[in-house]
Image 1 (cartoon, one colour):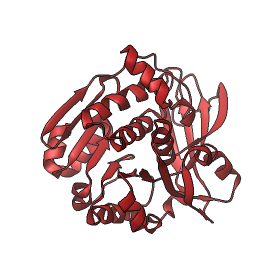
Image 2: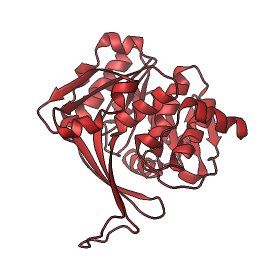
Image 3: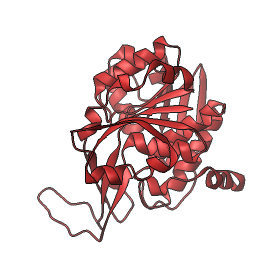
Length: 294
């Protein structure tokens, strides 16, 4: 069982031919709403890959909550999600004709979510506590320390890249970053941005996704490199979240880190080939089929 402490958002998605420049107004080709938020996306990805997932977070009692919760209620345990007075988190997503995205997020209720909502018993039952950076950083640091104290396993997706104290980072069992986040982390730690250098600097496992070049990891002295799946990219919006959720799911089932990275890379590739946030995330059978054809 995986516990995800993270963000729950409503996504407002605009399809544009080109990204707007400062001061420019563009007419979108298409608009839609979809459930999103890094925490929710990763919980959905892990669940669709076969894991039992408990989602911990916060939403308001507003119209955006209905959008944000529409997939969670059907696939994960939502009994630990609080209803608060702050508005439900919201993201404005622009996707251009090349499948690239630009995203602005209003955290709202996500900043009210408290680490105490993840009780000790839940931590002890979980194979991993999965976190991202769209909640209050102090709450994330507290939860990392509690997981460490209780002997649990924590996976931190340092996205977006906000600084945490070095002790908290080193207390994580695995830190997942993309190339930009790795650059930011390396700047704070005064080291090179490779998974190996970051891992040695922080004395913990580090995994770096590399977009079209796949992913690399360094943990317990082992260097791992996995190539990307060749796909026609339509939308990269939830690809990173898909990767992290499927990674956690595979580790939950006892996969080695290398095998888990391989499965996650494949699932993320499938996600890139589709449009949408949570709607792009594959189910386990789809990922299995791609792996059989590889």
